[in-house]
Length: 544
Image 1 (cartoon, rainbow, N blue to C red):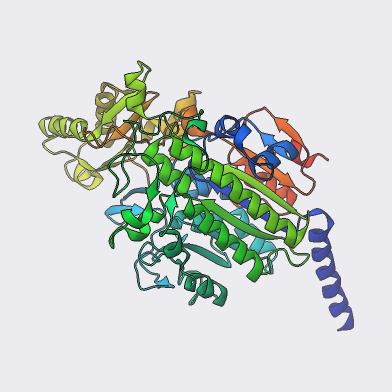
Image 2 (spheres, helix red, strand yellow):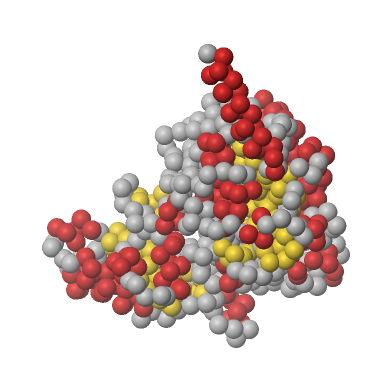
């Protein structure tokens, strides 16, 4: 018996020592929602010395980091960063998609089997149950159950997918109450510290403020004019210009939603992250913990104003200060025994109307009119539309009707793909059969192949020409603001910065895929490869 106890104790020491040898006490993963690579350099001279510049000047800057699949959306982006693989394996093929099994459109993290914890709203009915692969955070918890994994974001998917299935706490914003909530998937009640944080009503406090430019307006030389015809209006405004007096702009129905369209929501999230550091004892022992933070607000603001707006520049200058504040708190708690990585879930396209007006390639692709024309042709040819749904440039066919009418499925797919390819603004179209069976080395097809899942994606998938955005129909509203999702560099090229324990000061210019982050963490933390991982470790970070 004594021998067994001795052996068990020895094994515990070995496991503990494996963590203590070289792994940091804490890994902080920061994802900035909708951050272009160029922001690091366009705003560099205005950044402070403790935020982005600290990471760039004293850590590893992977300057050619890209998404190797499409679509480039928030859900797939967060899932790919933390699983180390593409949607073809982890199954998160969009923020939303059509589920044949459920006969309806579904959100990537919706889960009607769970309940909201922290309020009576419906904003907590979410979980990672649609994520078909483990995350690096799951692998850490599987190997070392005592590891503490906490994740947070304004968006539910930005908190849930990084934390994975075994998170000790995943928290996101409740648009009904302005508080942080979770679901019964993770816990039956909020921790006391979260309840105390919510009780301070930070969102209400910030909503009494005015969003003023952090500098004089004429100092924003890296941006266009403040009053731009390419920008949407926030509720309560007549022009897309500073200042944004939130107290005057708010009303009961939009009160807490408007808050997320301001940089104050980034401050709010940083406040919450610091509170988690203080109360969850993260990085407080020899066991590596992980803190996953996703700043959603740059995406919300970016969609409204576009990448060349004064508002987006001001947002990043303020975010830079939040990073400085966060890093200062981390170092006060764990010293230099941490590793931080910062990246983005996608970047963003220039406003297409701006491209059109400046005689650059690009424009809008209005889906409804094309789908109406396609349905008309299908009815004439087959006696039925044969289409169930279109989403994310995926066309889902009614396979039950096709089978019942003894129509050849592949023939219908090929017919639709040919029709779609004839539409103005379409670059390529593929059938699901073609994608899975082709052996041609085709970069665009390969990006589509990695971004689809056989159960969740459509029968025909198409991509648009560079500079084009899909919209339902034409309107003045449709031609303002911007979005993302394509295979092109403006959406796929993102920052990747590493900083902290044993991270060398260097720049890496070779191509690195977003899925290489989890592969690198695997070796930093001496873990088994995550189950579906297909990325490769960044050797320059590990060869010390």
